[in-house]
Length: 101
Image 1 (cartoon, rainbow, N blue to C red):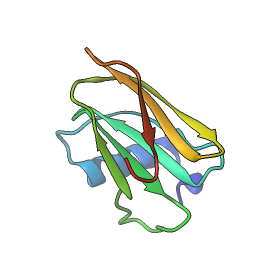
Image 2: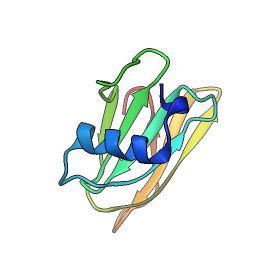
Image 3: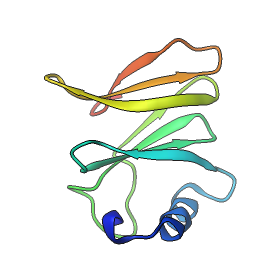
Image 4: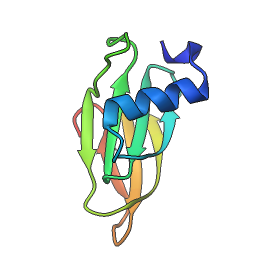
């Protein structure tokens, strides 16, 4: 679904999914292309599983709450499965299990 969308279409979808008062700070595709990580201004990461959930009304399969503003994030894939590395204001680097949070 997302691979056929332009950047403006993705942005419009994000507004409809997260609301007008919740800006997205960026997004990152999982290297295998089946998950989309979206970092938001409300200090939450939302992960979408595009392999199982298709359509215009997609909802996050996982939401991870940071305690402060998000600074940076990236995917890390290893033998244990997909993980998310993240850091935020006044926070150390966190390693999250991308399937459980």
